[in-house]
Length: 430
Ligand code: AMP
Ligand code: GLY
Image (cartoon, rainbow, N blue to C red; front, side):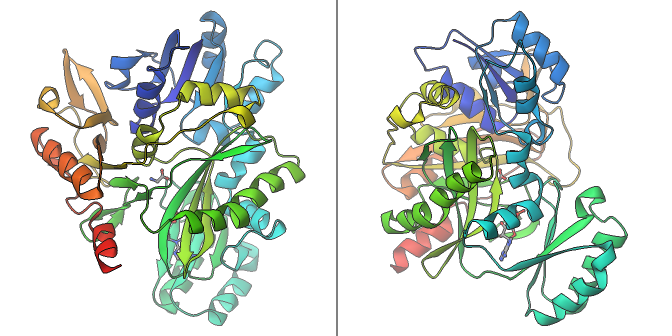
């Protein structure tokens, strides 16, 4: 089977690394890929948003299956593009339709979806420039902190949590009247603040049945102790110790089943991942957000724990035979520690030579922002590499990743040395 994977991050390297182990794989292409995907697949210099170029490539290279890593091509309708083209319509795309991708592309759409299908989430109201006065009035009825969310995609920056009412009023006004997040904040969702511990649950579906993949917790802030600016993610751990069987059973009953049934009821075509961001509020799950793709770096801890064939899973999804797929999961703990470029998530330099990759032992390194220059791997993004380790315990996995994070080097290397320590503390308290 010939496969085309779209994307260029650590998530895509992890997918490619795992699919390369599949006996049914013939040729794997990654577009555009990075220096890591190049080791396990063929990189194609093609933009994941250039649907015309993708069409030519798929037809010219006998591609049997397309897997979409990031959300942007999904929100732009790549799955519908394939379905509407007589030559492409029988080639399965792993990723939802444009309508399904609205679960991530529009907060207002996803909140209305949850309300309609009785899925637990924070109470909310949506406002536009025309209803700013009502929005300011709604803020008065809430207690601090105030949660404001730009409706559209805002590169992970569209959520503001304000401690003071005055700050919330100013931010709401600037989002609606001054396009603080461009078109993404033409509409703003204001919602109730949820207190609890966050985690993510990942589901795959073929529109009929589903499988729940291992859960994970990620570390979003740049600074130790969860301080500073939000990033794409600085590390992750799987499984999440407090997400025991009883909690996951609640998630399945209250969130996963009604989500899958809701998609069918609303006539939304959905084959792909559903990444459910949850808050555990006193043992009860509340949905914070849906994403229509896998998380990054969550993929880099979830995929290494999947023992069954990943390409087989994608094939089963594409053929709507997920019901008969046997998912097996490694019970050990996986962690990943992201190495980033100094200055990230603000401005940073690129092109620094990376050393030590050949001396890594006991971990798997997934490339995020890397490329090849004059035969050497160099930095090419804010998030550069992520070091994944498995362990019988979380301590053991973390120890391996941190040791290898020290061995790898480049100018401006930075990583958080406290990934997982909150979970270790939580476990020692219980
Ligand atoms: P998002 O960009 O949608 O992942 O949101 C960013 C972060 O804001 C989440 O990871 C949560 O930590 C926080 N957050 C979002 N919604 C709420 C809420 N209703 N209550 C508390 N925290 C929230
Ligand atoms: N790590 C969070 C995300 O992929 O959205």
